[in-house]
Image 1 (spheres, rainbow, N blue to C red):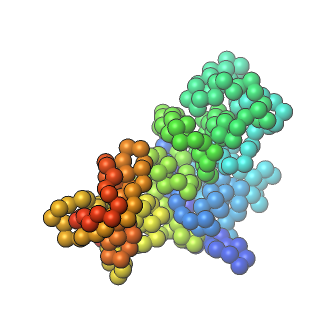
Image 2: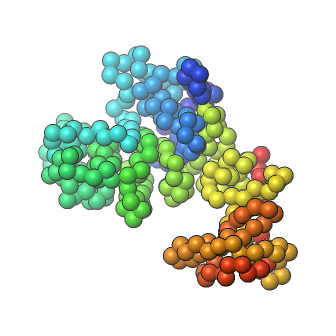
Image 3: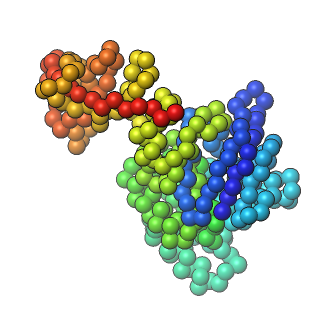
Length: 310
């Protein structure tokens, strides 16, 4: 579907994308994860044909994707991009915004497609409203519907769930996955919220300072990160003093026979469980427990030491 072949791009006195190389398969959902400034959004713009790489080539469906310098209007009609900035027309209804993308199709098809996407993305009650009447989360959902209207081949998402509350976000992600998979649409997701990516993508690419650090499934990268950066980026991780191993909160267990004796420092209620804070190897860490443990109490714990996978 898309091939990124040795793409490089640099800003004056700033980071540089360096030799990016990967393939996006048909119907695949790919996640790009990294700290702010790691090059995620820049790479997405290059994939959309909105920004010209300084070297390397983007292939789309076996052909070179025309860069902005080769087109009167940058971009490609079968590659859609959704960002945090609204792309909706402010003076028409949400229904008209969505149908604009399929304006050359029959009215019957427009009506059918609009109804389908509105139901999937929970915006049926918003169709007659204008942008000024919508919340940030509602705008994001309307933009997703608009981007999917003419069944693109590739959907590029730059922090698309940033304005959604937790409950709405989970529902929209599940419904969006169904639409993408049922219509065999390839997708690239950029997000700072790692749990959004874990629940959605088929493959993750970790970026740092414009370079690929690690590529793999969510499970591979979470349980076998290449280094401290990847471990910390993909969830709570406690690194040993000599950086030879790490462990996560779920690796720590209350164990009367455990070799680590520690003092309970605090409890934080999470709803379904508690975070119990203790000190291990001179560092404050926490683990999950169904009930609070009295502050100041001495307990024993055991924990699994996980190796890095360089």
